[in-house]
Image (cartoon, rainbow, N blue to C red; front, side, top):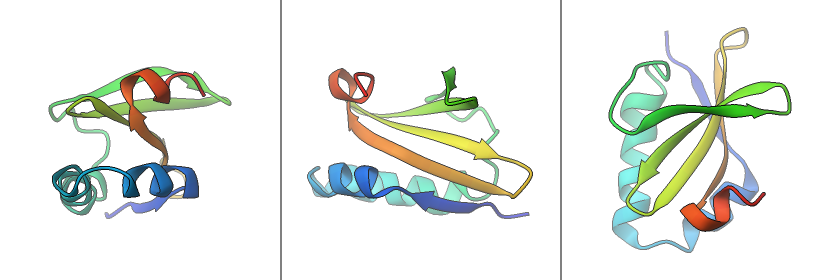
Length: 91
């Protein structure tokens, strides 16, 4: 079962500002690991605190973080933020 991956405008905007190799690493991760099974404990995926009632996960890309939620009922993943470690947790 493949999950539908949505990326918010905020995450897309922040991702577009990053270097090409970071963007490529992120896209490869989304296409291979995230859409197939987002619950697997691959390197760098950590459960974070709850945000707006949903369990939040984070994935590290160098000094950047992607924050995402998983909804098993509708088989989707929402990447709602991507930014440097110092900025991503301030929102």
